[in-house]
Image (spheres, rainbow, N blue to C red):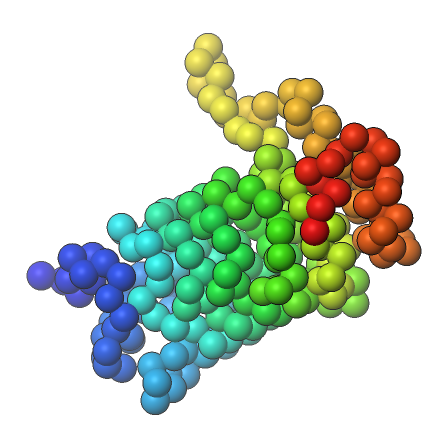
Length: 224
């Protein structure tokens, strides 16, 4: 029986030896990068890391300290950012996983966050977990358009410049083509994001942004 199957039977068991950690990384990631396994079995990655489809796991069984480039999950069943690295030197991609909270998120992400099709529906208190997104005012968040609530918390994240809301996808039953649903709700949320992005790129005046959002009728967005 392979290690991959053994781990699935004990789905969220924390691995207990350096060999188990190494075997899991070989079986479940593109581990053709330099790494360091510390005495506490936490891992540093020099390069980008892609974690393959989670095969039933709801949290990562390996604790990552830092990843020097991109840290990505394939679509799967990961529900929490527990054991995620504290520092990501590139982009963080958690799209397609039912993660519902920013708890345990990396505190510093040097480029962007991709979080489309997660269960995150609000940015409430995101700044208590993520302190910086981007470098020199270049960071961005790409999320499902339905997550556009409590947007004022974004102003407390250093270097964040932009948030992009993506319309939900659906499959056209007549053609089989995958399309994005650009309805009136999408346009309404797009308008709220335009106000937020104007202030993120400009004066970063959270109170002025709140006032403008409220005047436009975006009460859910105009919260911390």
